[in-house]
Amino acid sequence: MKRLVVGLFAVVMFISCSSLEKGTSLEQKYSITKESAKNWDKTIIQVVKGESLIEDWYGNENPIIYLRKTGKMSEKDFNFLTSLEKKDATAITDEEYNDFVDLVKKYNKKLPRKFYLADENLKNPKGLVDRMVRESFVKMDNPSTHIKNVVATQEEWEQIVVFSQQNDLSEKDTKKLRKMLNKFIKRDEFYDERAWYNREISERVIEITNIDAKENITSLEKNNVNAKALYIAYPEYFSTLEKWDD
Image (cartoon, rainbow, N blue to C red):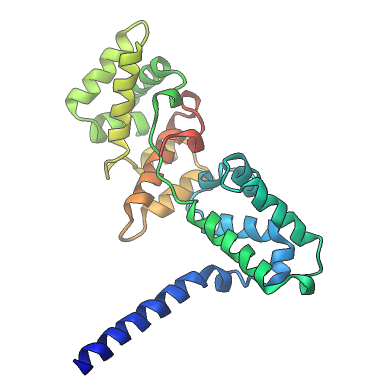
């Protein structure tokens, strides 16, 4: 019985220490101090950008604006944060500092997200299928040829061709296309760096290529790579990525 109690105590201590380590990791990683709390905007921007897998996690804009716009930073939070910048760092109390660190952690926890298309994210579905079919005849590898030859089943591609032959897509057709595209971005083989580099050579393609090359890529990382790849391939036919569903 004594051994059991000692063993349980050891487990509890291990969990407590692990939780403490995780809880303070951001504070340690970014050397957050009371001076950081005074310069709260720079600190939050640094942490948000540093912890985001892709810029679309914070709307590809100023993180403070994004957090406020999306309601992740409440008016109460904002008022508290702006009060810190009016103080000398030495005048910030331990309680205020801890509250600041808690906010940084809270915003960080709200960052990770997956991206999926909602019907309203397709701006011109007919134009999209027209382009996909048209580009599928190009000999050089591109996203459309890759989707046709590798990603889509024969039945799925035939449906895209049928859509392209219509004068327009109905609401039902758009929903069907949207569901199909969401299936595509769930597939491991969706992204192909050669096809996308033939579309454009840019920092954002390099970014998703580097993520895709990681060992033991997570489902969240794979989703982010594929969703952003779809947007990069046909940006004029979709709303910006941060507006997609999750």
